[in-house]
Image (cartoon, rainbow over all chains, first blue to last red):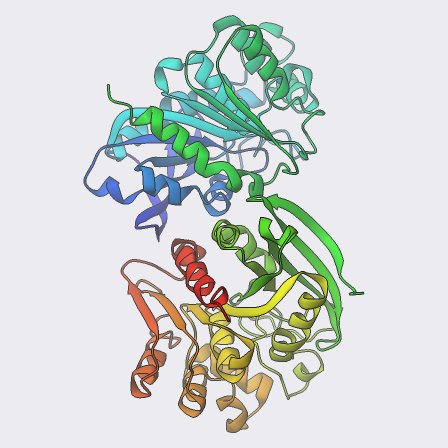
Length: 281
Length: 281
């Protein structure tokens, strides 16, 4: 028995867009997440694509604005969309949009007051997949994707846990958080000044250390206001080149950091993951 | 020269999602609307699909949640998405969600205090199309669609102005506002007790009076909480049958009144309008 409590359910592309809450032992709070169950889920075990959202988001932004479900229905993939941080009145927070609630950075905090709840890495890699496996008819295969802070989450977690995923993709990911303002601020608060900890949640440094054999796809808008200032995509591309890691990294004229960018390319990402998730064997 | 002031612009499916404001003479206030310009708009005069949103919406809900732009890009159709009422501090309002701002009902109010600004019928049929024609490279062909209150708007305006449109469609439209709570409340406020005025903004009564020769497509969810209580779709279907008006009206198990319902069927609506809009001659 899972402790999932249904919040909402909407028919969508012949499947179901659903929202649940549950008590998270890892995060020590009540969490909310969304799931899209494609029509095939009624009679078939399916693979899962985990989607990690960016700063300020909940599970609802991607659910409502990405238009991902049409392609997920076409390819028979369950989408799982967690929140971006622990939540609740007793969870530490900050007035800024880029620290605290809505800004969990998919890491495990070691510093007070954050360490009491902020363990999004363990939540996304361990607790949530266990819950999903228990509650839904999955086939044991999973991939991971995300946007911005969520792209950082997808890349770092996939590099550290390649056995858990068949493929990884990202939209405008923060790839070098140890050298950009968003990452430095968050890591300083959540991880203190231990640089070894910082390196353990930096996609470029992790890639250098561990390499990556999974299929990788990244899309990046060239009109993205954060492209240079927040170290999006480019340093990771350089690191891939240095280590001869094959990655499909594309830049797009005129596209910005918004969900309009995500919805323009989400079909291609779903198709990319479908190829890895449905591969025989 | 138009008085359009750009507010936002996002690259989307190789076209542009844009938001403008302008001073409306008809509504006597500053209005905001959104436009999707598909990639073909850069070198070709294109037809326009007007989308009328439902209660509480602005131009942003459909823009962000419908996923309509992918099909609009595929078919080369400009989307124009007006707001649902006049706006501004000096515009009359009501605390309820179903009267005043966000609830213009696409009619011309005759009663104080509403009559000073609430003339959404004239705005959608006359002022906005004139502005669009002036500002964008359109080919003179237009269709109209909408959801709920906006479905009521699309049907009533198409029946009264068939020469302006090539086709009309609706999602879960209010088709008999003179006999349902939403419509009666709004018409009583905006139009007073003049039943002739009421009849002039009721899709079923208008169809009975004028008939309709345009292609018509309506989709309706059967899990829609408002289906029976607000007289959605069904009375119009009966009226079509009585007058032998050909209309493609489909009911869908499990679908509710949300944007998830719209996004599930919007591709089919865009394709339906494309057929009428791109017809030779």
